Structure formats: structure tokens, C-alpha cells
Amino acid sequence: MNFRRGATSLLLIGVLAAVASGCGGSGPGDQHAGMAMTSTPPLPPPETAQLGKAIDIYEHDRPGMLSPVVKDFPARVYVPNSESNDVTIIDQKTFKKVGHFKVGVLPQHVVPSWDLKTLWVNDNKSNDLVPIDPVTGKPGKRVKVDDPYNLYFTPDGRFSIVMAERNQNIDFRDAHTMKLVHSVPVPCRGPNHADFSADGTFFLTACEFSGNVVKLDTARQKVVGSISLGHMAMPQDVKLSPDGSTFYVADMASNGVWVIDAARFKKIGFIPTGRGAHGLYPSRDSKYLYVSNRGEGTISLISFATRRVKALWRIRGGGSPDMGGVSADGKVLWLSGRYNGEVYAISTESGKLIRKIAVGRGPHGLCVWPQPGRYSLGHTGVLR
Image (cartoon, rainbow, N blue to C red; front, side, top):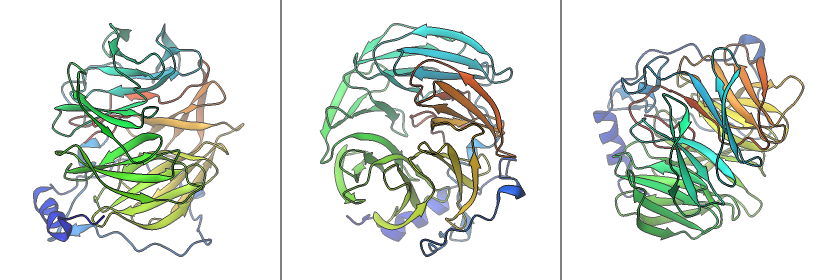
């Protein structure tokens, strides 16, 4: 389905958006560069300027740009262990475990609330959310929510959006009480990850078990389009490019990342990265997209400027990098080791492994907190 606002909407975004601020230090070292992708033709470079002004949806996510709400929060990593049904807390500075508590059945992700004040543990099988106070690291009273595989928030902060993967629904709930407002059946199987357009008027959701991506109108809370990535595809994480022109969709069955034109809602290319491409995280300087290749223990760096892989980092000793996030200063990429019961801290300056930290069984969507940004759109920390 074509994006009805077309070029006019993109021009409006360019007028309203501020010029991107200076870059932080979170790019690959020279020794890792130059990995040319020859198996597919190069993709066209993205359109980065509208009416003479560059936009960057991550301009408020620069190193150290912490909201007053979170600036005094201790720097921690919150790890939901899906198989041992608990949460491990790691101190980002010492790399030591400083907390641990039990939760419900099958915790999938730890998600920062829209207002940045609460972290939510998604207990998928016990159908509840567990709030964490990021000041104390202590859990609160569980809130009943049906099938919370993953959790997002509308850009205005009014609604939480639950990816009810098992039920094949996307549920809009009150962002504060978590009471159900509207349940949207989706024409796919396994809705799990999402991201919003630059202006927030729509979002894309990946459907793991049917190999397609659906488009939903945010205000109308309605499915308005769907495209297939292929009958063998298993799409995972979704991220929008800094300029708002394209969505990137990790595909762990196709071993790479699909590129989707945001305005036309059209598949325009594919970037091979590695076996089991899974999580997607922009660098703090908006230059690179980190791609965790869970099936081979590597991280690929896609250049947003060229849409090509510029570096490949290998985890020393192997591993199964899954979901995670980037530290507030942009210097460390934190990823869960899904099948190894560990967490990886990786230098974004050199690509080298800093530390492996043993946690519980089946660590999944860990949250690095706090992070820079004005508000959270959900998942493990999609901030703008």
C-alpha cells in the first residue's frame, strides 16, 4: 500500500525537524572496515535532506543527552532470563551482578515506559507486566496483561502497544493503567517487533511466523497495509533510518536485513549480514546500525550513508548475540547471549569483547538504562 502523504509529508518532516547535532564517538575501528558486499548490487543512497535541511530522528539520543528524569538513575543492565524466569541486574561500570529477582513465566523483554520512569518486564506466559523502579532496582506489583511478548508506546504517550504474538493481535492499552482500549487482529502470524515513522503517523510490525511486515495507522489504530518478505522469511527487529526514509528489518532465516522504503511502503533491497540476523541498534552518532547475528556470534555494522556492511565483529569464544542496547555514552554495545546464559559487553570503538557475564537461562531482551532521549517508544530502548 502506498503512503498517501507521499513526498509532501516527507517535506513537512524536513521543515519541522531540527538539524542533526554533532556526532559521538561510536564507530568502527579502521581494522574492521572495508567488508564489501558483492553478492547483491549496491542499494541507492538514501535521501538525507529535505528543503535543504537534514533530519535525524536520533538527534536527541547523542552521548550523555540524558533527560532530567533519568540523569540520576544508576547505570544498570536489566536482563530478563526467559528460561529461568528471573531478572539479573548488572552494573555497567564494574560489569558485576548487583541484583536478582524472580518474575513470572517466560519474561521476554525489559521495556522503558514512555515517560522513562518505569521499566516493564514482559512475562509472556503468565500474562503480566512487572514494573521495576530504576532508582532502586526493585520490582513492583504485577499488572495483568494478556500475552505481552513485547511492548511499545505511541509517540504522544497516550497508549501502550502490546505485541500479543500468541494471540495474533496488536493491543492498544492505556499507557498508565494498562487497561485494554482496542485490540487489532493482524493479518499475519507472530507480530513481535516494531518501529514508528519519523512523524509517528504509522508504524511497521514484523510478523515472524508468516514472513511479512504489516503497516498500522497510529491514530486510527488500524492495519493499512502488508508486504511479504518471502515464504522462508522470519523477520525480527525493526528500526527506522536516521533520516526517516527507510525501515530496516532483520531476518534471521534469510541471514540479513531487508530495506523498506518508508514513503512507498515497498521492499527495495536486502543486505546480507550473517546467520540469524536478529537485533538492530543505531550507534549514538547515527552513522551505523549494529546487527546481532545470533546464529554465528557476530555483529555487523551497516552504514546508514551507503546501506552497506562496513565491518564485522566476532565475539571472542563465540556466542549467540540477541537483543540489547547501547550505553548512554555510546561506547559499549550490550547484548544478551540467548543460548549461552551470558551477556556480552562489546566496545563500539574497537569491536572487541570487553566482558562476558554469566546470567540466568535464556537471556533475551535486555535493557540498558538509562539511555539518552526525551521519551521511549518501547522495546529494549527505542528513544527519540
